[in-house]
Structures are given as structure tokens and as C-alpha cells.
Amino acid sequence: MELTRWTVSLLLLSAAAFVTTGAVTSYVMAPTTGGTTEAALIIVPGASITGEAYKPLATTIQQASPLKLWVVLLEGFLLTTPNPLELGGAVTSAIAALKHQGMTSDNIFLAGHSLGGVFVGQYGSSNASKLKGILLYASYLTRDVKLASYPLPVLTISGDLDGQTRLTRIVDSFQQLEASLSQNPTNKYRTPVVTMPGVSHAQFASGQMPKAVTNKDLNPEATSTVAYKLIAKHTSAFLLSSLGDSVPQNLRSTALSDLNKAYTDTKTIMQPLITVKEMDQNSQNSDQWAIQAQYLESGLSRSQVKVTDEILPQMNFLSSKPKIHGAGNDLTIQTFAHLAFSSNPLDISTVPSAPRVLSFKMKSFEAVKDAMPAGTTLNTDVWNITCKDINQAAFNLALQSSSPVARQRYLDHGRPIIFKPDVMHSTGLGWSTSDIGLNEDDQGLHVTSQTLKTQLHELFDMFSGMHYCKGLSPFRAMEWIYVDSLRSHA
Image 1 (cartoon, rainbow, N blue to C red):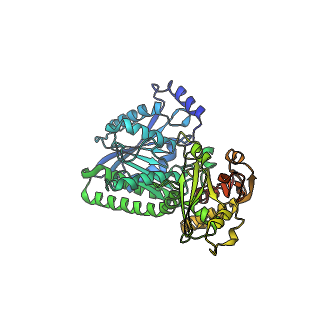
Image 2 (spheres, rainbow, N blue to C red):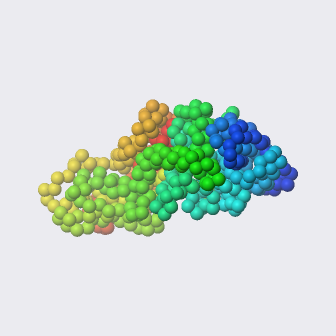
Image 3 (cartoon, one colour):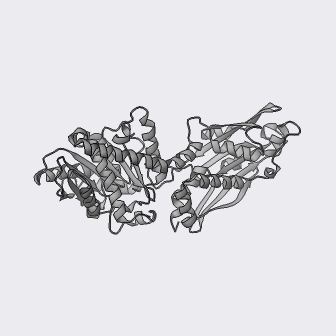
């Protein structure tokens, strides 16, 4: 799914010359069963993958479906890569080929793998009247398009060992689905988001994969045969559900039951990720890990002191100063946090979804101790706690919060996170302009935090008793555990 800007420009400029040439061909696979309801599935390949590579999957889908199902594999896109300029004509030609070979219904579904799925999503938005639904194989609707408002039924389906279309990106789509269910519970069937255990990005196709896939994809636990059967099962259920009353009631009931189970199974996979993700990205606009870090820093429990946090934009964060309010046994520590994400304007799935760096400002142990009533019991083990220590605690939380399957995968095959000593800064300017060190090699991910710690009594009191960190969010550690660590090489 990854394209550089120059590749996109080249595709668009070059494809213009091919739009009217009929370069894309349709390989039509006639129905293998005689169902009472007729439908067709047109499959758009991923980048640098031939249409023929999807024949084993297409055959399995036809075998699994009770429909009289035609399948069309599109072949011959410019540079063997689907693009929006050729896609419209290719779909029109595919439909014409279906009619020529004897299809009589207008039950047309369009599927796309990887980058093909991105363009299928765009095509469906403006050509809804031509289709009954779209299927996104190891793909998703990009951020500017929402599931709930999409004009067609849409299946988003991927594997939890997809190293190209990250599971952490599919979490976003699943959360969209979850948010829509309170308004329309039937979205569970209209816009299902399905994650299959043990399946990789490449297992939607067959044969030799391009380097863009092999360099990033993860090793599957499911065989290709098992993967095809899983994809076929969910595809069949989605087609039957989307066709509504035009299919026999018993078949539709079974399809809805299958989709309901797929939703439940997917939620089980997603929930640990969602829980940790929402520590940083939540409706309260507070970073829960920054709050936990302050408790670690202070050596106090939640029953002894209240900590609040506010996530601020960059400029506001630069001028913010954590504070201790109240007196005696009624103290509140106000902390501040800022999340910085890797630039990703095109919503490319290989870019990490978690914050690249979590910056947070705390009051130091000394400042908290000085503000507490005499005789308060503090955990003095944290007297010299470092940002490195807090990063290690973030990783520990991420590992403990991961599913048993993900945790075991990491322990068996994952490259570790290696926490390096903090880089110390003496000025706020030096700390503010620094960045966390995230350096990946074949040994693992080397993390170096940036820290600033001031004395309890500085010349200007507003700078006294501070401890600032540029660190790792638990969700970033979790993304490493679930995805990036599982590659043998950087």
C-alpha cells in the first residue's frame, strides 16, 4: 500500500495515456455452483501483484459461496499497479465481459487488495449506483472517508500478522465501527471490520510477492489454504448479508451469524490495543500515562494525592509549567503532555499509528515531598527515577496489557526494546528542541529519552522542582510488540 509521492505522480501522468487503450484485461471465472442468486466479485490487485495471483483465493471463494458467483480478476494495470485513472474503465469493461459471458444480474461487488483497496474505496464513493458493496482486502477507507457515512456496504478484512497494513491502523477502522453501533446496530453487518488470526498481508494473493511486501510483512501462522478459507468465509457472509432479501432467508441468517461471530472475535483481538491506545487518545484530553508517570515520580499512591493532566498543542505545551495546588492532605498535581506523531498525510499503513514521542512535564520527587505534610510516607526508591525508568515501565505495561497470543509471539520471536541512558539537558530550550531517540536495527529498537530536571529552589521559583521527559508511550511500545518487533530485520 506504500507509494512515494513521485510514484503517485508518475502513475497519474503515465496512466493518462493508457486510459483509452484498454490495457487492463478481465479474466472471468464462471460460477462453479448453481445457486439461486447470481452475483459477481471483481478483484483489483495490490501494487506490483498480478491479477492471476488471486486465482487460488477466487477459486476458494467460489467454492465457499452458495451464490451463483462469477469472479473477475483484473490484469494489466500500468506498471502492474492499480490506479484511479484506469480503474473506472477497467470496472466498466469487467461488467461488460460478465454480461457477454452470460451474467444477467446487477449484483456487482468490487474488492481490492492493499493499494487496490484504497482505490476501490475511492471508486465506490462516487460510483455507488453501479455496485452492491466493496471489500477491502488488507486495506481500509482512508481517514477522510468514514465507515458510517459510506454510501455502500463495505467489508474491511485483514490479518493480525499483516506487516504492511498494520493491525494498529485497522484499530482505527474498528473503533469507527464500534462508535456507529449505538446509532445503528446493523452496521455490524453493513460495514464489518474483520481481523483474522495468524494471517499476513501476502496471504490474500499467491506466488512471489514484491519487495515492498516481503520487506515489511510478518511471518504467518496460518497456511495459505487456511487463510484462503477464512477470507472466503467472511467474503461469502458479507455478500449474502449485503444482498438482503434477494437471497434465501436461511442463507442470510447463517451469514449474519457468521458476521456476528467475526465481530466478537475481532473485538477480542482489538480490545487490548484500544485500551492502551486510549491512554493517550481519549475524550478527556488527558494522557493517562503521563498521570501514571507522575505517580511513579512522586512515590505516592492515588489515595494520597490527585494527579491531573492536560494534553496541549505544541506552542501551548512549550510555555506550560506543572504545578502543585492545595495544601496538607488535599494536594493536586497538574501535569502537561504533548503527543507528536510521524507525518502521514496520505494515511499510509506502514507508518506507525502510535505517537512517535510522548513529551510530558512533571513535578519532581523533591517538589512533591516538600509540599506534603510532615510524616507523609513516600516511596524513596523513586528518589532518582529517570525517564529511562518510566519508559521501561511503559513497556512493562504494554507487554502485560497485550493479548496472551501477542505476548507469546513477542517472547518467542520479537526483537527487544533496548532502553539507553537519558540525555540530560540543562535548559528548557535545549530540552524543547530535542527529540526522542528511536533507532531500529536487527538487534531491536534502541530508545533514548531526553530529560530536564531542575533543583527544588531555583533562582526563579516558576522553574523549581521540575522533571521533564521525552519518552515512549505504552501504545508505541505495544505497536512494537504486535508488529515491528516480529520482523527478523530492521
